Image (cartoon, rainbow, N blue to C red; front, top):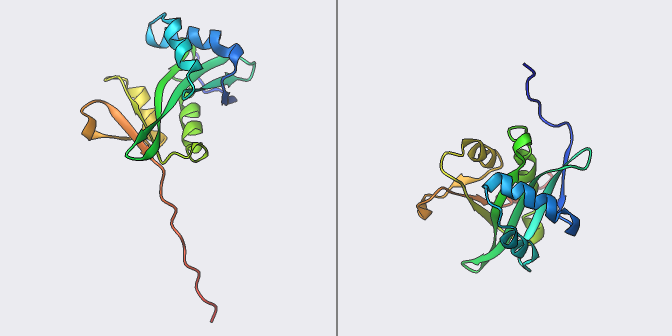
Length: 160
């Protein structure tokens, strides 16, 4: 039996209008729903953004929907959905998308991000943990949070 290998090249980019159909298919695969209207509303929302993971040949194999909220006077990124095509699960797609988002928190002027995880979705928990998310026990659900590390200033020594 041939061993599954991770993709050699997956790139992430913001979703374009022409990607909505492919993302709707992935959404129905990942969440077993066919509510395209609800997905379309989220994609067209002024606060929502969408990221897609694209294979070398241009095939969209994953997507992430994220919004922005105010939490205690701070802007926070809420990762609403992370979906990967059934055929490409377990091959590192989520492991490319989530760190891509985390690396761009500063660009969106966010100090933290959070998401909710379905109980028992161990592969998602592993992916989010690798990206730096930690469980938030205050919420009472499977919620994970990422906080941007504070920059430490290093004092330079005076030359003797």
